[in-house]
Image (tube, rainbow, N blue to C red):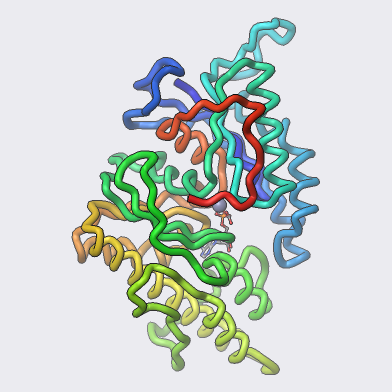
Length: 354
Ligand code: KG4
Ligand code: ZN
């Protein structure tokens, strides 16, 4: 069975074809294992957004209208080769279903993916599956590993718009344990990068700068907000403000900036790792999975893996390519959450949550 996944929740336009070689028809509701990515195409408007230092929704959506069809076409061509019978009324690409991220995200961006997927599903007479983008980030972990995550598990979702801890007791069984009360993790990286005069997106820029700081301990400590709170919520705006106060009205050398980047990254990762391990212990889970753009952070990948080993949890982190927004993760989630919906009943849902 092969699913075309479409992702347009923020500034990326992604389309991918993912196959589950063990299932053969659309009647199958659950994939087994070993999903195979046949193609994964992502067009990003990041170069356009860079000059604004963040995502301008209108700019993202305009770019997505321009590229959505070529991106879908490219994903299908990479998976199956050029269309065989151009004039045939019979659809020539052997996909079994279409999956689309219908939220959360920017309304203008979401509409482009959702309306495209609806149109294709109607014209090609294929089942349409609406996928929560955040669940897509979790299922990126079913695409890049040799072994599958075992239930129950704790999922840490860290992206530009979200920071969530979720308990999963099985496929389709999600319980939100906690979220950020203010800034999302990626948002904090992006804002701190801006304060330090770095580019967008901030995460990779901070990571690169922090690497150039050779000492293991910074000469000052930034706060680790809510690290000892008993709940599973997060807060990053105070940490961001602490950086702003340190930088304000000062001419910083590159070495000083590197020290701030290093300590900021550490503070964020300390909080994320501590709370994730606390949740894993409390709910006595088998696995921990991480998803979202911030999962591309080398510091987070290393530290969560080490902490998992120490505490006997199996840790899964997607490849860096699968951590950031893409269509393959949306298709992967659809295999395990195969709920066919009448195409016309699906609509973009910017505030969608668990
Ligand atoms: O999941 P994603 O691609 O888009 C959203 O759904 O928001 O996440 C994008 C976020 C950005 O805020 C970016 O700065 C962050 O992921 N990010 C990183 C790294 N790479 C991307 N944050 C920290 N370290 C990184 N290496
Ligand atoms: Zn995302």
